[in-house]
Image (cartoon, rainbow, N blue to C red; front, side):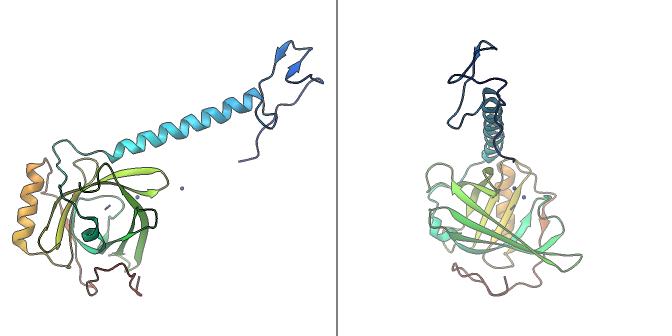
Length: 231
């Protein structure tokens, strides 16, 4: 479940130019709207290209792992509300946390707000992070991308879910390193957990090192979009 200048530089004129021309140097100076120099334009273009390249790199992290199969017939309304993290692959964002929950709520623009919350086992301190998710492709397929930092996304792929009672989900990230089991209640029946582990193994995931999350401070289940007062 899975983690944000100075003013525009201007060219100093060594002479009194005619529009965009410096006679004593014999060459024309390209300018932007506010007399921007060629050098400043190059720097700005390079910065824009760098940002675009980094964005494309991180967007690549929103991919689907080889062999993974997102669910069909996904219903977004069933996705909203709070889910308890039953098990997870080790990851640096959640390391050392227990009582982890994820709450999903609709945003006005059609995206999904993600609010992750957990307690640091060592200190008892609660920590929370907020991000957003959106679909990758049709919204009836359980393939989404999530961001907790600007335009940088990672994959959020629903591999299995309870179509009858909407009580559990199996979710993976952008590669086989990240896997989660989520449930509407803080405890999930061992038989269901075993079934989800089999599905994960069939799709190429190593489940031997999953961390099963303690929920000794679990609050009453809430499936609506209201944020609990204790949050």
